[in-house]
Amino acid sequence: MHGTPGPQGSKTRNAAGAMYESSAKVKPWREAVKTAALDALHHDQNWTALDVPVWVDVQFSLRRPKGHYGTGRNAGQLKASAPAYPTSKPDLDKLVRSTQDALKDAGVLADDSTVASLSASKVYVLWGDALRTPGAVIKVWRLNDFLKEPQS
Image (cartoon, rainbow, N blue to C red; front, side):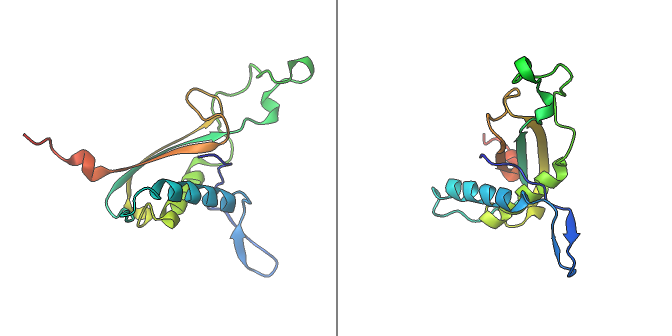
């Protein structure tokens, strides 16, 4: 799914004392994940939210900062000093939090506490098998299916 991944977790208080998300990217990201999940579930009329142990695997593809590229005649060329992987904000755990909450809101998960196994990574767009634009590849498996013994 495509969109700018938004971290969830940091809260800020306004002058009136109300709490709100620090990142303006959280709401649009959660909506994008929810919409993509609902589109995928649309094909299964009998779908019910997973309330069994699940494994969630997500790879976030982030846009490189402009500072990773040269200027002038080297514009568009990646600098040799540019890091291979994103190690700055947004934090991976906060990206996962917003994504899992969106999966719950869409009805993929009954609750994010059903996530018993998690693998997550963040990469730059166009790096290896990453997406060509910012977004994420999200996969959810029922762990019970992996634990079944082969029938003889």
